Image (cartoon, rainbow, N blue to C red; front, side, top):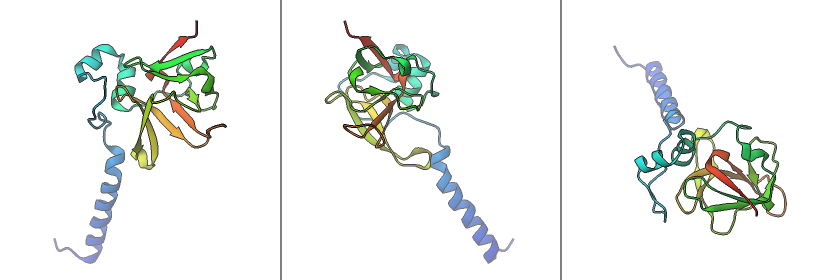
Length: 164
């Protein structure tokens, strides 16, 4: 078969499309290795967490909206990482964003870290636990005052301790 201009352009287009879609179609994997104060092996994480928690915290998964009881948690208390128990958010910063995930306008001091997330063809800011690196959710700039931020967290990635 001879390669004419039409074949060349068609093959180039298919190659470009494949290269552009590859990151979107790639299976989720563990976050890049980083050094965190609380570290476990994959086997230890699997033993410690439920399958849903493991998917979100260690594989950057996302729970379905409106499935977490923490979305409807309105008592005073503290939300912590389900992986390492690090305190993350105070109930005083929680608000109903209408998104189906627990949302906060501010984390506790030094509780979370942020990274650039370019999965699914968009750029977002991913939020992780500063102690164990567990994926918690994303932060957006459409939240309420005083910060204007919306920390949209996966409820399965957190626990709640009511204030005594």
